[in-house]
Image 1 (tube, rainbow, N blue to C red):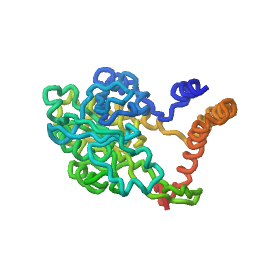
Image 2 (cartoon, one colour):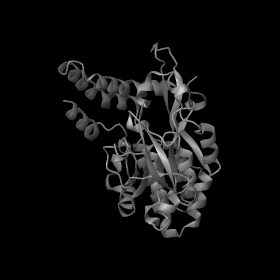
Image 3 (cartoon, rainbow, N blue to C red):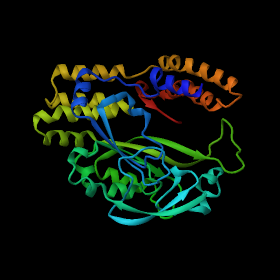
Image 4 (tube, one colour):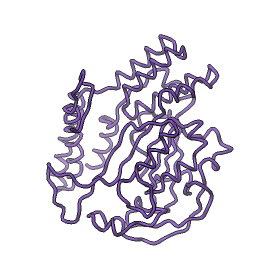
Length: 355
Protein backbone atom coordinates (compact mmCIF):
# COMPACT_ATOMS: atom_id res chain seq x y z
CA UNK A 1 0.00 0.00 0.00
CA UNK A 2 2.86 2.37 0.82
CA UNK A 3 4.46 1.83 -2.60
CA UNK A 4 1.08 2.31 -4.30
CA UNK A 5 0.51 5.59 -2.49
CA UNK A 6 3.96 6.84 -3.43
CA UNK A 7 3.43 6.01 -7.10
CA UNK A 8 -0.03 7.59 -7.22
CA UNK A 9 1.30 10.60 -5.39
CA UNK A 10 3.95 11.40 -7.98
CA UNK A 11 2.00 10.41 -11.10
CA UNK A 12 -1.52 11.67 -10.37
CA UNK A 13 -1.17 14.20 -7.56
CA UNK A 14 2.27 15.81 -7.86
CA UNK A 15 3.17 18.01 -4.93
CA UNK A 16 4.80 20.49 -7.30
CA UNK A 17 2.66 21.61 -10.21
CA UNK A 18 3.65 23.78 -13.16
CA UNK A 19 2.87 24.07 -16.86
CA UNK A 20 5.48 24.42 -19.60
CA UNK A 21 4.55 26.19 -22.82
CA UNK A 22 5.44 24.53 -26.16
CA UNK A 23 8.33 26.96 -26.57
CA UNK A 24 9.63 26.19 -23.09
CA UNK A 25 9.39 22.44 -23.64
CA UNK A 26 11.19 22.62 -26.98
CA UNK A 27 13.96 24.89 -25.67
CA UNK A 28 14.58 22.71 -22.60
CA UNK A 29 14.79 19.60 -24.78
CA UNK A 30 17.53 21.26 -26.81
CA UNK A 31 19.30 22.81 -23.84
CA UNK A 32 18.25 21.22 -20.52
CA UNK A 33 18.51 22.97 -17.19
CA UNK A 34 21.63 21.88 -15.36
CA UNK A 35 21.10 21.46 -11.61
CA UNK A 36 24.09 20.96 -9.30
CA UNK A 37 22.97 19.15 -6.14
CA UNK A 38 25.73 19.37 -3.55
CA UNK A 39 25.03 17.11 -0.60
CA UNK A 40 22.73 14.67 -2.37
CA UNK A 41 22.47 11.98 0.33
CA UNK A 42 18.66 12.17 0.25
CA UNK A 43 18.38 12.08 -3.54
CA UNK A 44 17.31 14.86 -5.88
CA UNK A 45 14.18 16.84 -5.05
CA UNK A 46 10.92 15.58 -6.58
CA UNK A 47 10.06 19.16 -7.53
CA UNK A 48 12.13 18.71 -10.73
CA UNK A 49 10.17 15.71 -12.06
CA UNK A 50 7.74 17.86 -13.99
CA UNK A 51 10.57 18.98 -16.29
CA UNK A 52 11.13 15.43 -17.57
CA UNK A 53 14.07 15.33 -19.97
CA UNK A 54 14.39 19.09 -19.75
CA UNK A 55 16.65 18.86 -16.70
CA UNK A 56 20.06 17.30 -16.07
CA UNK A 57 21.67 16.73 -12.67
CA UNK A 58 25.20 16.93 -11.32
CA UNK A 59 25.13 15.33 -7.87
CA UNK A 60 27.87 15.46 -5.24
CA UNK A 61 27.98 13.31 -2.10
CA UNK A 62 31.20 12.11 -0.41
CA UNK A 63 29.49 9.94 2.25
CA UNK A 64 29.75 6.37 0.98
CA UNK A 65 26.67 5.41 3.01
CA UNK A 66 24.45 7.36 0.63
CA UNK A 67 22.02 5.05 -1.15
CA UNK A 68 21.64 7.44 -4.07
CA UNK A 69 24.04 7.10 -7.05
CA UNK A 70 26.04 10.28 -7.55
CA UNK A 71 27.94 11.74 -10.48
CA UNK A 72 30.75 12.84 -8.19
CA UNK A 73 31.56 10.95 -4.96
CA UNK A 74 33.61 13.91 -3.75
CA UNK A 75 33.22 16.93 -1.54
CA UNK A 76 33.17 20.56 -2.62
CA UNK A 77 34.73 23.49 -0.84
CA UNK A 78 36.51 26.78 -1.41
CA UNK A 79 39.74 25.12 -2.54
CA UNK A 80 41.40 21.77 -3.21
CA UNK A 81 42.37 20.22 0.12
CA UNK A 82 41.92 17.17 2.34
CA UNK A 83 39.37 17.48 5.14
CA UNK A 84 37.83 15.26 7.79
CA UNK A 85 34.19 14.30 7.30
CA UNK A 86 32.49 13.83 10.69
CA UNK A 87 29.98 11.02 10.25
CA UNK A 88 26.74 10.84 12.23
CA UNK A 89 24.11 8.19 12.86
CA UNK A 90 21.88 9.98 10.35
CA UNK A 91 24.04 10.11 7.19
CA UNK A 92 22.43 13.34 6.00
CA UNK A 93 23.66 15.10 9.19
CA UNK A 94 27.36 14.32 8.55
CA UNK A 95 29.49 17.44 8.21
CA UNK A 96 32.94 18.71 7.32
CA UNK A 97 32.74 20.81 10.48
CA UNK A 98 32.70 19.40 14.00
CA UNK A 99 29.24 19.21 15.50
CA UNK A 100 28.68 21.67 18.32
CA UNK A 101 27.46 19.11 20.84
CA UNK A 102 26.83 21.48 23.80
CA UNK A 103 24.11 23.08 21.65
CA UNK A 104 22.83 19.96 19.89
CA UNK A 105 22.39 18.04 23.16
CA UNK A 106 19.59 20.41 24.15
CA UNK A 107 17.28 19.04 21.46
CA UNK A 108 15.34 15.82 20.99
CA UNK A 109 16.98 15.33 17.59
CA UNK A 110 20.37 14.73 19.19
CA UNK A 111 20.37 11.00 18.36
CA UNK A 112 20.66 11.95 14.68
CA UNK A 113 23.95 13.66 15.48
CA UNK A 114 25.56 10.90 17.54
CA UNK A 115 29.10 10.26 16.21
CA UNK A 116 29.54 7.41 13.74
CA UNK A 117 33.23 7.82 12.97
CA UNK A 118 35.29 9.99 10.65
CA UNK A 119 36.74 9.68 7.18
CA UNK A 120 39.23 11.85 5.31
CA UNK A 121 38.02 13.09 1.94
CA UNK A 122 39.37 15.23 -0.86
CA UNK A 123 37.69 18.54 -1.58
CA UNK A 124 37.74 20.55 -4.77
CA UNK A 125 36.30 23.93 -5.75
CA UNK A 126 33.41 23.71 -8.20
CA UNK A 127 35.07 26.38 -10.36
CA UNK A 128 38.18 24.21 -10.66
CA UNK A 129 36.29 20.96 -11.21
CA UNK A 130 34.26 22.33 -14.12
CA UNK A 131 36.81 24.73 -15.60
CA UNK A 132 37.09 22.60 -18.76
CA UNK A 133 33.41 21.58 -18.78
CA UNK A 134 31.35 24.70 -19.57
CA UNK A 135 28.49 22.46 -20.72
CA UNK A 136 28.17 21.37 -17.07
CA UNK A 137 28.01 24.86 -15.57
CA UNK A 138 24.93 24.75 -13.33
CA UNK A 139 21.99 27.00 -14.03
CA UNK A 140 20.87 26.33 -10.46
CA UNK A 141 23.02 25.37 -7.48
CA UNK A 142 21.59 23.57 -4.45
CA UNK A 143 23.79 23.04 -1.38
CA UNK A 144 22.96 21.01 1.71
CA UNK A 145 26.29 20.34 3.39
CA UNK A 146 25.59 20.90 7.06
CA UNK A 147 27.29 24.19 7.83
CA UNK A 148 29.85 24.10 4.99
CA UNK A 149 27.60 25.74 2.42
CA UNK A 150 29.31 29.13 2.30
CA UNK A 151 32.63 27.41 1.53
CA UNK A 152 30.98 25.66 -1.42
CA UNK A 153 29.60 28.98 -2.69
CA UNK A 154 33.00 30.64 -2.37
CA UNK A 155 34.49 27.84 -4.44
CA UNK A 156 31.92 28.54 -7.17
CA UNK A 157 32.56 32.29 -7.42
CA UNK A 158 33.14 32.34 -11.18
CA UNK A 159 30.18 30.11 -12.00
CA UNK A 160 27.88 32.14 -9.74
CA UNK A 161 28.90 35.44 -11.28
CA UNK A 162 28.78 34.31 -14.90
CA UNK A 163 26.23 31.54 -15.25
CA UNK A 164 24.08 30.49 -12.29
CA UNK A 165 20.56 31.94 -12.16
CA UNK A 166 19.53 30.80 -8.68
CA UNK A 167 20.65 29.06 -5.51
CA UNK A 168 19.05 26.95 -2.79
CA UNK A 169 21.30 26.96 0.26
CA UNK A 170 21.00 25.55 3.75
CA UNK A 171 21.32 28.30 6.39
CA UNK A 172 21.69 28.09 10.16
CA UNK A 173 20.19 30.15 12.97
CA UNK A 174 22.07 28.43 15.82
CA UNK A 175 25.63 27.14 16.07
CA UNK A 176 25.01 23.52 15.08
CA UNK A 177 28.59 23.22 13.82
CA UNK A 178 31.76 24.73 15.25
CA UNK A 179 32.69 27.85 13.28
CA UNK A 180 29.82 27.58 10.79
CA UNK A 181 28.46 30.86 9.39
CA UNK A 182 24.98 32.02 10.30
CA UNK A 183 22.22 32.99 7.88
CA UNK A 184 23.30 36.63 7.76
CA UNK A 185 26.75 35.84 6.37
CA UNK A 186 25.37 33.61 3.62
CA UNK A 187 22.69 36.16 2.77
CA UNK A 188 25.28 38.95 2.50
CA UNK A 189 27.48 36.84 0.23
CA UNK A 190 24.63 36.19 -2.19
CA UNK A 191 23.26 39.74 -2.08
CA UNK A 192 26.74 40.98 -2.99
CA UNK A 193 26.39 38.82 -6.11
CA UNK A 194 23.06 40.40 -7.09
CA UNK A 195 20.86 37.58 -5.82
CA UNK A 196 17.79 38.20 -3.70
CA UNK A 197 16.04 35.97 -1.16
CA UNK A 198 12.70 34.59 -2.39
CA UNK A 199 11.72 31.93 0.10
CA UNK A 200 12.84 30.31 3.34
CA UNK A 201 11.65 26.86 4.37
CA UNK A 202 12.29 26.60 8.10
CA UNK A 203 12.81 23.77 10.56
CA UNK A 204 12.15 24.14 14.30
CA UNK A 205 13.31 21.63 16.93
CA UNK A 206 11.75 20.60 20.22
CA UNK A 207 13.72 20.09 23.39
CA UNK A 208 13.77 16.70 25.11
CA UNK A 209 10.58 17.33 27.11
CA UNK A 210 8.63 17.40 23.80
CA UNK A 211 6.14 19.93 25.13
CA UNK A 212 4.23 21.29 22.14
CA UNK A 213 0.74 22.10 20.92
CA UNK A 214 -0.94 24.03 18.14
CA UNK A 215 -0.02 27.32 19.82
CA UNK A 216 3.62 26.38 20.47
CA UNK A 217 6.63 27.93 18.76
CA UNK A 218 9.77 25.76 19.08
CA UNK A 219 13.16 27.28 18.36
CA UNK A 220 14.10 28.03 14.75
CA UNK A 221 17.20 25.97 13.90
CA UNK A 222 17.88 25.99 10.18
CA UNK A 223 16.25 26.52 6.81
CA UNK A 224 16.58 26.18 3.05
CA UNK A 225 16.86 29.63 1.50
CA UNK A 226 16.12 30.14 -2.20
CA UNK A 227 17.69 33.03 -4.11
CA UNK A 228 17.32 34.27 -7.67
CA UNK A 229 19.10 36.93 -9.68
CA UNK A 230 17.59 40.37 -9.43
CA UNK A 231 15.73 41.64 -12.49
CA UNK A 232 18.53 44.05 -13.39
CA UNK A 233 21.23 41.41 -12.97
CA UNK A 234 19.26 38.98 -15.12
CA UNK A 235 18.81 41.69 -17.73
CA UNK A 236 22.56 42.28 -17.82
CA UNK A 237 23.11 38.56 -18.41
CA UNK A 238 20.62 38.50 -21.29
CA UNK A 239 21.96 41.70 -22.86
CA UNK A 240 25.49 40.26 -23.06
CA UNK A 241 24.33 37.29 -25.14
CA UNK A 242 24.00 36.97 -28.88
CA UNK A 243 20.33 37.30 -29.91
CA UNK A 244 20.02 33.58 -30.71
CA UNK A 245 21.03 32.65 -27.15
CA UNK A 246 18.64 34.96 -25.33
CA UNK A 247 15.43 32.93 -25.55
CA UNK A 248 17.05 29.74 -24.15
CA UNK A 249 18.33 31.69 -21.14
CA UNK A 250 14.95 33.34 -20.55
CA UNK A 251 13.22 29.95 -20.74
CA UNK A 252 15.62 28.48 -18.18
CA UNK A 253 15.01 31.34 -15.78
CA UNK A 254 11.24 31.07 -16.16
CA UNK A 255 11.35 27.30 -15.67
CA UNK A 256 13.23 27.76 -12.39
CA UNK A 257 10.72 30.34 -11.21
CA UNK A 258 7.82 28.01 -12.04
CA UNK A 259 9.44 25.11 -10.20
CA UNK A 260 9.73 27.28 -7.08
CA UNK A 261 6.35 28.98 -7.46
CA UNK A 262 7.64 32.53 -8.06
CA UNK A 263 4.81 33.21 -10.50
CA UNK A 264 4.61 36.97 -10.03
CA UNK A 265 8.34 37.38 -10.65
CA UNK A 266 8.08 35.19 -13.75
CA UNK A 267 5.36 37.48 -15.15
CA UNK A 268 7.44 40.54 -14.28
CA UNK A 269 10.49 39.16 -16.10
CA UNK A 270 8.51 38.38 -19.25
CA UNK A 271 7.13 41.94 -19.23
CA UNK A 272 10.68 43.23 -18.74
CA UNK A 273 12.06 41.11 -21.60
CA UNK A 274 9.20 42.19 -23.87
CA UNK A 275 9.92 45.85 -23.12
CA UNK A 276 13.59 45.25 -23.99
CA UNK A 277 12.49 43.62 -27.29
CA UNK A 278 14.09 40.30 -26.33
CA UNK A 279 10.69 38.61 -26.68
CA UNK A 280 8.04 39.08 -29.33
CA UNK A 281 4.46 39.83 -28.32
CA UNK A 282 3.44 36.28 -29.26
CA UNK A 283 6.31 34.71 -27.32
CA UNK A 284 5.51 36.79 -24.25
CA UNK A 285 1.81 35.87 -24.44
CA UNK A 286 2.59 32.15 -24.75
CA UNK A 287 4.98 32.21 -21.79
CA UNK A 288 2.63 34.21 -19.59
CA UNK A 289 -0.23 31.85 -20.39
CA UNK A 290 1.86 28.92 -19.10
CA UNK A 291 2.80 30.86 -15.98
CA UNK A 292 -0.82 31.71 -15.16
CA UNK A 293 -1.95 28.13 -15.80
CA UNK A 294 0.68 27.01 -13.27
CA UNK A 295 -1.07 28.91 -10.48
CA UNK A 296 -3.38 26.68 -8.42
CA UNK A 297 -6.39 27.95 -6.55
CA UNK A 298 -6.83 26.95 -2.87
CA UNK A 299 -9.95 24.95 -3.74
CA UNK A 300 -8.24 23.16 -6.62
CA UNK A 301 -5.30 22.25 -4.42
CA UNK A 302 -7.63 20.93 -1.72
CA UNK A 303 -9.61 18.80 -4.17
CA UNK A 304 -6.42 17.30 -5.59
CA UNK A 305 -5.17 16.31 -2.13
CA UNK A 306 -8.39 14.85 -0.69
CA UNK A 307 -8.33 11.51 -2.59
CA UNK A 308 -4.83 10.69 -1.38
CA UNK A 309 -5.71 11.74 2.16
CA UNK A 310 -8.58 9.22 2.11
CA UNK A 311 -6.30 6.51 0.72
CA UNK A 312 -3.67 7.26 3.36
CA UNK A 313 -6.31 6.94 6.09
CA UNK A 314 -7.21 3.52 4.69
CA UNK A 315 -3.53 2.57 4.61
CA UNK A 316 -3.15 3.59 8.24
CA UNK A 317 -6.00 1.27 9.23
CA UNK A 318 -4.81 -1.64 7.08
CA UNK A 319 -1.22 -1.40 8.31
CA UNK A 320 -2.13 -0.90 11.98
CA UNK A 321 -0.95 2.66 12.11
CA UNK A 322 2.20 2.35 10.05
CA UNK A 323 0.66 4.66 7.47
CA UNK A 324 0.49 7.49 10.01
CA UNK A 325 3.24 9.44 8.27
CA UNK A 326 1.20 9.40 5.05
CA UNK A 327 -1.90 10.59 6.89
CA UNK A 328 0.05 13.49 8.37
CA UNK A 329 1.62 14.32 5.03
CA UNK A 330 -1.61 14.50 3.05
CA UNK A 331 -3.53 16.19 5.84
CA UNK A 332 -0.86 18.86 5.79
CA UNK A 333 -1.14 19.15 2.01
CA UNK A 334 -4.91 19.59 2.32
CA UNK A 335 -4.77 22.21 5.03
CA UNK A 336 -1.65 24.21 4.14
CA UNK A 337 -3.01 25.84 0.95
CA UNK A 338 -6.07 27.08 2.82
CA UNK A 339 -4.00 28.41 5.72
CA UNK A 340 -1.58 30.04 3.29
CA UNK A 341 -4.41 31.73 1.40
CA UNK A 342 -5.96 32.89 4.67
CA UNK A 343 -2.76 34.90 5.32
CA UNK A 344 -3.41 37.08 2.28
CA UNK A 345 -4.38 40.69 2.95
CA UNK A 346 -3.13 44.25 2.75
CA UNK A 347 -3.41 46.64 -0.18
CA UNK A 348 -5.20 44.84 -3.04
CA UNK A 349 -4.65 41.65 -1.02
CA UNK A 350 -1.00 41.77 -2.09
CA UNK A 351 0.53 40.75 1.27
CA UNK A 352 1.04 37.25 2.66
CA UNK A 353 1.86 37.71 6.33
CA UNK A 354 2.76 35.59 9.35
CA UNK A 355 1.48 38.39 11.57
